[in-house]
Length: 545
Image 1 (cartoon, rainbow, N blue to C red):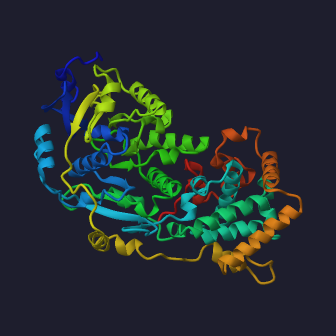
Image 2 (image 1 turned 180 degrees about the vertical axis):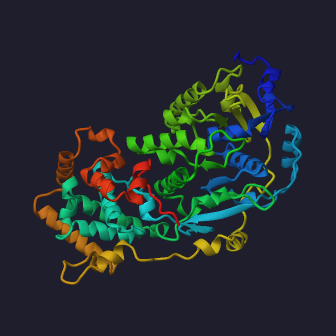
Image 3 (image 1 turned 45 degrees about the vertical axis):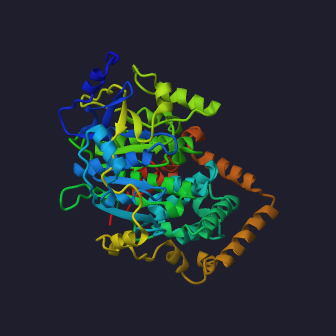
């Protein structure tokens, strides 16, 4: 495609024949041209996208605008509301001179409109329907990232999950996982994993301490039942508009590892459950992944590979994913290459690092007649550089764009109104009350009398459990086994029972699936859980309700 040399050339690149979302109007030579709309074809929204820009440049309002336009076209939307200012999507906007001026500039017929919305909160912390996952469903890879475990500890956690799956020990909440870990390091349980490397007391101690610290921060409520069914995100309202699902995160915004990984679980769960539909006339769901850089920070190679694979494959299941962050360099290259739709707000260039990021951003755009370095540093709030995929799947010309004004409330709904909306939701009764049914904790505690003390003794109070774990860790150290030495010994044992494939090139899931114990289990039992582990990119598993 030749480089566009005029506003007419650029406008022609956005003159789509089919349904499309209106983003705004073209900026050219310092003027806004309302007769030259900039749009995204609706069928191309499952080709993923990126919304980027410095703080205060209008990214949140862009999310709100795109969510509104999708809902109006009957497409459900998921929004992660990190700062707490997206709840206004459910209420009509307030007209003022600024809104009138923006609407006139871009040729928008602005009407105050609220959109159908559901509000969720992780574990019920904050305003929203409680959103929980079971430990089994969350899986070892994602949990290891939340607990900030190293590679060896992550491997050991994978073996613990594998053992629990094999023995029918449901890991529904944190006490279930603690019980299984404590059992596998007891005199009775030590032999259980010996054939595939065993579990050292030192590594178990690290995992237990991480779980205890996690729970002490009030995070235990995120795990348990009733587990959230991500199919709830795919609903439309009675008037045909798509429901906007807003995950309220202000109460946990200081726990970025947790909420970013939980968002990835939601996406992975959708990937597992949805059937293939190929290219459709509209997406089933568009999922906005806010503060995306938090997901990629300190991520292992296996974790990044799984993200890349999920993004690559979920498109054919009708789900579009938009990553929202400050600069494109926050997103790994293999993921960035799959993001066909780009809305780039202004960047700042105050430091050498800023200058470097600016140059790197410019290189990610198609050739343009704009001076992008100058343009990106001069954009105003609510303006962006846009390029999307056309109906033919080819990139559109780069277009400086003045964005439309959202028609819903540009700010948060007040707390009492939000609480009323949550309690009036048909989903509230289904998920509001936590349930604690029989699972690994109860099963291990109910073992026949005369056997060694069950892990339940460590669970009566947090202090008692900590005392016993500290004693176990102390005995290990007295025997001359440091935490590092214990982990090294565990890795050597695991290597002896695995193939010679280099450890660093294999994910936890691959290691478990490749073990002799797992193969024997799959041949003899063929359990549903086993099948779900083998097909899971993140080691996640779900039991259908």
